[in-house]
Length: 381
Length: 254
Figure (cartoon, each protein chain N blue to C red):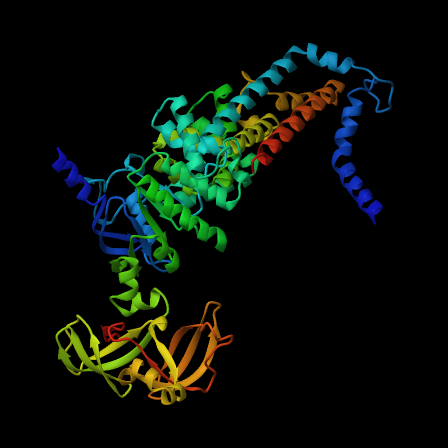
């Protein structure tokens, strides 16, 4: 008994096996396989048209897969209609029933299940409290604000206690502040309910701040699956690296290989880099560096302060000239044109004792980073 | 400027409604033959209601109008839903043919239906007239309901199914309540179309079943009678009420 419970706990709640979807001869989805773990907050991230919403619609049952199979809770649902799948959806447009008030909208699912009226009333009130809409029962949904409609849409879905809640860009219609608030609220709601959430978004910040795992999609296939940290820190390819935040890309060539290390030549510099890829000598590679991992010092400061020079990894520094500085509020970006060609951007925090940006255009600077913070990827055209 | 605008609007309304107004006034004129005003009377209304043949024709008209409106509301709504929901090959053809039916001259529809009924050797009367009027009204209902269906967020139906509603529940609890104002508007539109139709009725009914417009038509061939004025005044009232009600339904919730 306990063993079978444990087994069902370990079983992915949603499984996609080689699922493809073709619309009018176009592949919206190309042979995608994906496991959604029980109780996790999974985000599917990608630009519009990458197939992320298609995955959601296939799991919900609004679309049939062209090939492959989908199972929910270990049961094959590939051919089941939406009303017979134990998942619920929060639509981007909310899709509330315009002719019903808040109470009737939220009660709809339970009424379809034929639950007694008194039980429904209690549950609806309970759920409305959960989404902070107490006392809104008799309001017409058309008269609510965007944020309130959003909450009704969420309440209408979660009242059914689905195995999985599917959210299709639920926050995209809200303004910035409200969106930030709803991101937190959704995350808390998910923890409280323990329901698996699958969210679709094109907003990398949204994906990172809410999810346990992120699926990065591009052009109908999955580029990478991992925790927000691993996707950000260890992007599998240039597409992922560029899609999740700013990145500097420096071309280089492999000189020599060691164990989990490679000596590469970049910008006339010979440096050792940590890498798990199996490169060959002379192979061209990309070195990826996040702007916030770069450290910039002026050549003048380095020459005057031997201590600074000791800390600053001189043997892996690139020399160049500051082009411009861009004020970002809490931080600022320093754009450096390297002497050996190419431009890198470094993000700097304001020093406590600096009132203004430290670097100025045409300053001669050296750019460096801590060994191991770089990512080395095979060369892509 | 403001006065000019009021004057202009008044002229338009006078142009549109003066003939109707004159007729309503004459329905209360005590003179039988002359156009001169001979004092107020309700005699023509009394006479009208004691004219058994005319009252039978009026009842027949109301019956046909109500039945035709109901049948075409059901059929038209189903067509609209099919057009909106499915992407079948002949979809465009059906959609266009609805407009063709709406635009076709009544005389063409009337004659073509007559030919059809003759070919099927159906006796002209109640049933043929009903079928003809349903044919006349269905496109109007379909277009009205279809327009309203297009105005909806298509995800609403998906949301209902997502929440466990089957085909029937989606129709009963979501689609029908949402389109109902348009269906009702279509019903009233059909009702007025049917009740004032002369041409199609002329070709598609027989001596066994006489409707009001045809009866009036045969009456006025022997000269204008004041009862007809009275009857027409009543019909204007009914039509005005039907139009007003259907507008109210369309406006509400949209």
